[in-house]
Amino acid sequence: MNHDALVAEMRTLRDQVVGVTDTVVAAVDGLLIAADTEDAIDPNGLAALAAASLGLARRIAAAALRGPLRRTVTCSSGGYTAVYAVGETAILVVVGDEGMNVPQLHVEARSAVERIGAILLAPEPEPGPGAVPAPDSAYDPEGVLG
Image (tube, rainbow, N blue to C red; front, side, top):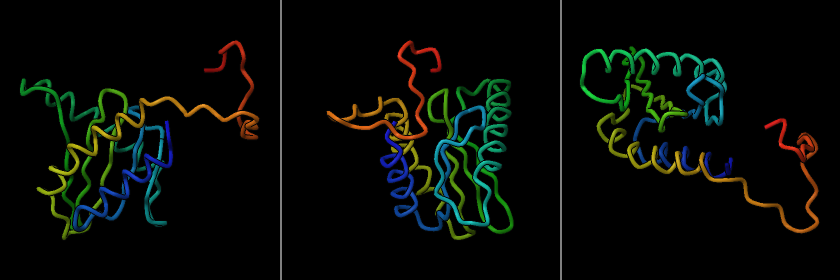
């Protein structure tokens, strides 16, 4: 996964839709993958809660027999939080103020979710000749760790 491309996609969505203030991408288990948030927002906590809410919303959609869940939106006194499924393995969380253009968000998020899904599935680019591994990466020639 190309982290820079993922963050760029998140910022593009924020720039395209009036009122979007923060974005988070997480695994469906709530593990944070990337965040573009204000300091006041805890991205790890938001990721975990959004993943739980999407899981519950998927069960509600299944019980209602209306097809697979696409998104869930929470309306608060100060704005909105929308959670979109990115395939079966990830979520996109979008936070906006009370002026957020929700219909436009739904339109723009459709293609953003597709692009984010592609970024998440893309393999890491191969390091060039003579590249030194990052200091926190583990050497695992047998593939045991991952």
